[in-house]
Length: 317
Image 1: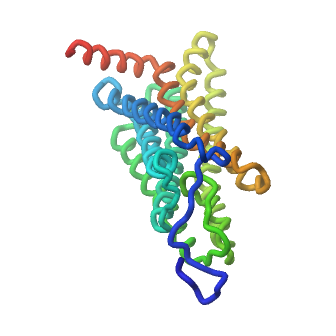
Image 2 (image 1 turned 45 degrees about the vertical axis):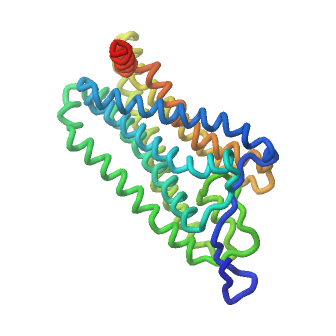
Image 3 (image 1 turned 135 degrees about the vertical axis):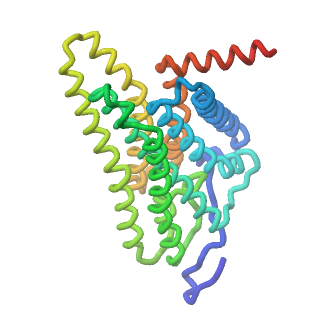
């Protein structure tokens, strides 16, 4: 530790991460489900990306946004992989201060990107349903790639001040975190200095990204429902709503665990550490596992592309 002017304050050189509280002796066995989850995540999202990249028929706005979603979910999972597998496979619980800040920046940046991509996908569905004749003219390739670039830059610029704000704070007491990775809501409980600026800026990030994105997603689906109700036939309504089913699942898979984790961090100071760990794992692992499965099952074009890819590999063998 680096001593400060006060014997009670220090700048930690490292933080201590935890696996599953109460199951430390079983960590080597607990590594099996985590390894399987990472395999599913990388294989599933990688397959989605490969199918969209190789099938020219899928170079359309809906599928390009889906590719962005798969890419950011791979980013989130790659950010957590080193420390998660380090803990469960090798018992490596220590992470340096700078590495922890970098991991925090990476996890939250990709999470903000994921929320923004889900919003872009909801807007895509609204334009496709409300104005199908102008869909291709409105969502051109330059606009889609420009949207992706803006989402990435905005997310990183919003997150950039947080590591610097944490660096200026004095730390007292312990340096043990509640998860297998570094998250800002967990880190912010460790300093003993004035964290009001960190809290205000953190609240600004949450409201300007997750809060605003979720509000606009709800508004877009309200407009979609209004448009669908004006369709004369019940069969036509079902067909239109079916195009939104996968996206609704993706939104729920993302926001429900996130809200649960936020509630635990905000109000669960006295709850079991196991609940903290389980909610954090649900938030980071559930969406990237579920989304490729949902889109592969419910989206005919993606399912067809996967079948063609498997058939080509079999024919080569």
